Image (cartoon, rainbow, N blue to C red; front, side, top):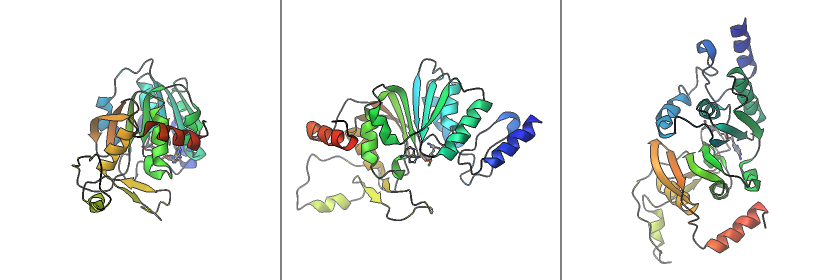
Length: 255
Ligand SMILES: C[S@@+](CC[C@H](N)C(=O)[O-])C[C@H]1O[C@@H](n2cnc3c(N)ncnc32)[C@H](O)[C@@H]1O
């Protein structure tokens, strides 16, 4: 019976990070430690995304088993999902097949940094749960800002801190205590693990998220859920423009 076959395949493809809801109430990770993940996040974000995405393109970075890719494809978008982990990509491909969405989504094994080679823009960049896993997080956002058409949905783990902060145009060399004040933009470096995961590297506070997004050319227009930021492209607002541009081109090899 088809149902038994699906359940067997889910078991064969363990472990699952996304709890996908499939036919007849079958789920891929019903005992997920975070709850019904990421459905509970999606219900908060979904109202901020157009219902009709026909004609829209989406790039889902770090797509994992494709939960968000598949939801956006259901709204009509043409979705490309990328991830570095072939195990999760196999799950995503399998689920797309099962949901008859193969003509709307494709999944590719790719590093986020490889997107620097892409010239075309995507209407939506879906960039959730990856930033803090990167050694070069700002480079990722500089790359993404060049390929964002209409919006980016961004999520990162954050460190708790005061949220209000007013940017200063300059800080005196002998006034550096201000850099450690509550609310000042900070990226906390993780030498070993968070939650047993050695791939966690940099954890920003909220102010750092806002400042980083701004200097990477994004304007935050909504915060639909904890640690989720919906952004619009806001031109290239990087300070010291040409110096940064040279650094970007050297780092990406696009000279
Ligand atoms: C915490 S999961 C987030 C999955 C999904 N985006 C979400 O929000 O539920 C991080 C995902 O990013 C992928 N990933 C980590 N580093 C990456 C990189 N450098 N480029 C592309 N994907 C990456 C991991 O394999 C994993 O599937």
